Every structure is written in structure tokens, then in C-alpha cells.
Length: 459
Ligand code: PLP
Image (tube, rainbow, N blue to C red; front, side):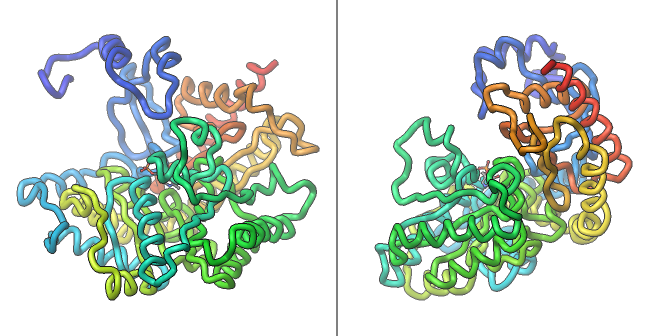
């Protein structure tokens, strides 16, 4: 039904209108318009239904975000109640609302270490832009305004605002819409399967951490503001750091007094089996960004959690921070996020990922797909996993990205009732955290079928 005029609308009409008026993110619009968009109509648990009535298992939780699964009416009820009581007020100029303050308190409690202070925004990209400005402001307040350089990694994704794009390490994004923001440096990613050149995972972890120290020395230690990394690089293809990587990175940051930022937009809220990826990898960040799982995608909301060191300096010496968004701490989004946190906590969703479904997914993927002729390597932890599509498994040679093998596989998945995303020549999975073992079995059955179909397509 059409929400505006209540007239039934045919899918083909929607597609025609979409082609005429809708510019989609991360989409080749011409290619899309040639075939028309797939229309998703409703969802429940881990399943989506499209306008043709097909049931699809969502192996990506939307865009890595619907952690509690679809169809939780409690969140809709809370949103309605909050809209009726106070649909909007801002948190600028010495005001607050109860949901925003309660959420800040809850987040301070679940984040690791002394991340006791919360700044709200609406998207992961805005959280990252907030961090760029806040970290640089911190060093100004500390009397070292020359500390501007932010170091991140090749193939990292930190959003698509100009700040997020510049900080991120996606070369295809850097080529569009430049120039990028100055003062962003990139080092190699800890992609053991694709880039280790014969080193053991442990050796390679040290090599990659060493790249940080080399970059710091090249830029000049006193010019570096922060190092930023996702605990696991999600959109880069679920690049999971080899053992020892984060410990070595942290040591180097401490040695040169460089702030450590964990971008938890994907890893946060249970994805890796703990509240945050930082806990899974024993990272002690000075700041973290979060979004997605914060509201399970039911409302747009993001946040930056700031440790005592940075927050106390900004509060004591920084005066007004000229930064914020109309919807920072939006009361409806905050109320929905609070309800989402309640569900995660009371239903022990994260413990279930850590103890049951996470290990099960990882083990089943390796057991059932690891030997497939296309699958070179499987990595991940909890309910996030990546698979390298290898042309030659013995040499770790991956398919040339021009062959678009990932896209071929993704399209087979789409046609066969599974959402599995392609990141170049890697396939990735990040299902809702409430997925059951039986649903994991179904997901892997479908993935297997689609990998076989991909082999046929390549023949
Ligand atoms: N940081 C990471 C690690 C992400 O994965 C994303 C989005 O996928 C972002 C930042 C940007 O978030 P958003 O799309 O909400 O702006």
C-alpha cells in the first residue's frame, strides 16, 4: 500500500518512479535503472520479503546494523510514546532531554575503560567527523596545535562525508570528489591472507604494526594526533587482525603519546561477541565511534564515547566546542536506542553470540565452505565473517577484481533468497545477532549453492 495516498502501487510503477527520481548511494544508477531496483516490503526476525513475495534471509543485518533483528514492536511503541511526549528538542545551548541523558549514562556503562563521556550525532560518518575535529581540538587545548595528522589504514572504511572519506583508505573513493582533507595518512592493512607474502600471522601482525611506527617517524611524532582503526575492517572485507596486532599498535601509540581511536560502527553492540570489538581484541581506546547497532538501525543515531583524558581537558580548558548537529541526541532516536540496549542486555543477546551462535557460525563456515574450490580462506569472530575468493588456493592468488567474481556470487545469492555482500573479491556475512543455529544452517546451505552457481558462471 502507498503510505501517502493509500492506493495500492504496482512494483513496476515504483521501479519507474525510482529510476526517474531516486539517486541511490553506492550504486551505478545507469546499471540499476536498466534492470530496476528490488523492492523490500517487510521484515521479521532475520528474514526480508520483497515485492514479489520472495523470502530472503538477511545475512548482512541490513548494512551490518539490525542487531536485534527485524520486527521488534517494543521499539516502535517507544518511538510512538516519545513522539507524543516530545518529538524533538535539541541538546545545544545548555538544554537536554531525559532520553539523551539516560542513553549517555548507559553508553558510559557499557563502553570499555574510562570512556565516560558521550557526544551524539546521527550517522557513523558524523561520529567520525566529530572525532577528527574533537581530537584536533584536544591537541589545540593541550598547547600542541601542530598535532593534526590522523593515521588510518588502506582499505579502511570510515564513512562517506568528506572527513570520513579522507580518513578512510578506500582508493576508489579517494579518486572521486577530491581534493581530500589534508593531514590524513594511511598505512598497510593487516590482511594476512592477501598480503602477508609467506609470513606467519604473528610475524605479519608485527610487520603491519611496524608500518605505523615508520609512518609516525616519517610524519614526525609530534605532528600526529591519532591513529584510527576498526577492530575488524568490515567494509574492507572483514579483515580480521592476526594475533598480536592490536597489542603492538597500542604499544606504539603509547610510546609516541598518540591517541588511539577505535571505529566501532560495525563491531559495536555485540557483533564480535562482546559489547565492543575493543573488548574482544583487548584494545584500550581513548575514543570510540559507534552507530548502526546502537539502535539496531531502527533510528538514525550515532555517538562518540570519549575517555576522561580528552573529555576532561576539553571541559576544563576548551570553552565552547563549535560543533554539533540539529539532531544530536534526538529524543526519539535516543529512546529507541535505550530500548534496543535493554533488549540486548535482558535477552542476553551478546552472550549468546559469544558462547553459542558466534562460534557455531565460524565453525560451520570453515567446515562446510572452507573446502569449496572458490573459497581461499575464512576469517572473522562472533557473527561477522569474510571469505576470500581465490583463483589459486595453493598460492593465495585471489581473483582479479575486474572479473567481478564477488558481484557474480552476490547476484546469485540475491536470486536465491540470501543477502551476502561482496567487498571486491571477498564475500562477507554479518547477520542479525538473534539468528538461530537452524537459521545459520539455512544461510550456509544457500551460500554453498550460490558458490557452486558462481563456479558455473565462471566456466
Ligand atoms: N565507520 C565504519 C567502520 C563503518 O562501517 C561505517 C559504515 O558502514 C561508517 C563509519 C559510516 O557510517 P554511516 O554510513 O552511518 O555514516
